[in-house]
Amino acid sequence: MKPLISRLAAALLFAGAAMLAQAQLSIEITGAGASRLPIAISDFAGERVVAQALTSVIRADLERSGRFNLVNTAGSVLDENTPPNFPDWKSRGADALAAGSLVSLPDGRYETRFRLYDIQKQAAIDGLALTHTTSQIRATAHRIADTIYEKLTGERGIFSTRIAYVVKSAGRYELQIADADGNNPQPALASREPIISPAWSPDGSKLAYVSFEAKKPVIYVHDLATGKRHVAANFKGSNSAPAWSPDGRKLAVVLTKDGNSQLYLVNADGSGVTRLSSSSGIDTEPQFSPDGEFIYFTSDRGGSPQIYRQPVAGGAAQRITFDGSYNVTPRLSPDGKTLAFVTRDGGRFRVAVMDLASRQVQVLTDTAKDESPSFAPNGRMILFATEVGGRGVLAAVSVDGRVKQRLSVQAADVREPAWGPFTNK
Image 1 (cartoon, rainbow, N blue to C red):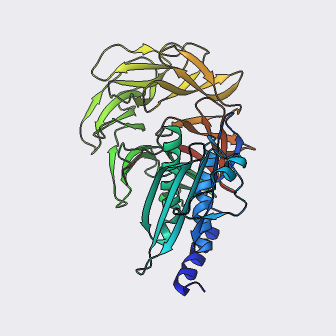
Image 2: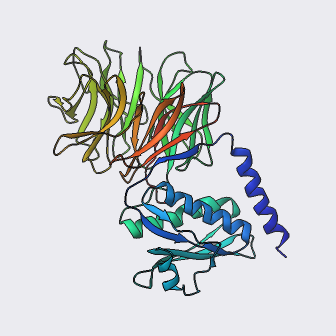
Image 3: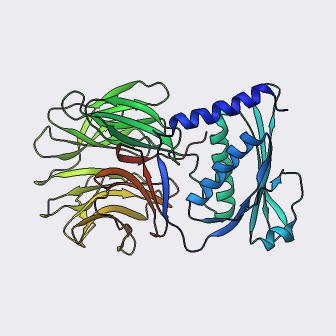
């Protein structure tokens, strides 16, 4: 018979999940990658309810990535120390297999161990041991999924990262932070006035955003650990579109204190201000290049909204987009090689990407009102906001356009997504 404490912990885990079901993002996979690696995730050995909760998250993470095809394990329970029957798993079509166990410790915590096998080579290729509490089941599963993803693809997994977004419901705005899979949403700020443009600091510890609670747009920097915040820009007129410098020391912002919307630099603590752009048009939506040398931005200085870039150290702006009469919201991939933006395509607003070396452009989405693109920290996916049935939802698309997902909150309007960075936690 299971220990009472363990059974109670498992019950609390699932009760908490049920209570959050109405508030968290639900994910629908609307398109998957063409070539996917077949992998089997066996049921982990140990306390059944908790072990199944762990393995279900691992499976969901890998399936959602579009890089894997999950092989039916038919209820097979395998721990990390039992040699797998390689010919059997090969006959089921698996190229890789993950097996593990979850053990209750005397102090009430758990120890989870797992091992990853290459079925073709009939060898173990990776493994991990983690100690955690019941409340950390999901985080542990994300860590394991990240390990599997990185070992099999050569790219760092993003399952342990977080996303920020704004939920509007019944005249109330909430800035929420959730796991990358939309679960475990936590409110960072609630207001009767709009909240827009959340931007993660490079270390993931802070969010800059624009709040209208003072009846005008003001930029705040919010410390997520303490909940404390400070004003970063509250000049005359509008203060908007904050973007962090790669070192986390400065923000590029858009101010109207001297007339038209123009680009400025301010220190993250709210001190100092330096003007970056001086044009007769509207300059907005700044974004630093990953090396910190350039700022990409949207401007109508040429007559229609297009994307430009300008050296941070000073110099003339260079136009980047030329296809079409409307290209806005530049966002750089983490390696600085790809530019994501919103383009008007046949009257519809869609997410597109440009290879900055070749200047080749590809439209990735088939929706009509896309906005706010945001790269995953490994550069593989782009999170964005769109509209379905007149309601704001979040969606994600891979940089090759093959993998598509839709994320929504029941009976709410969801917008302004921002994908957080990798952290070392």
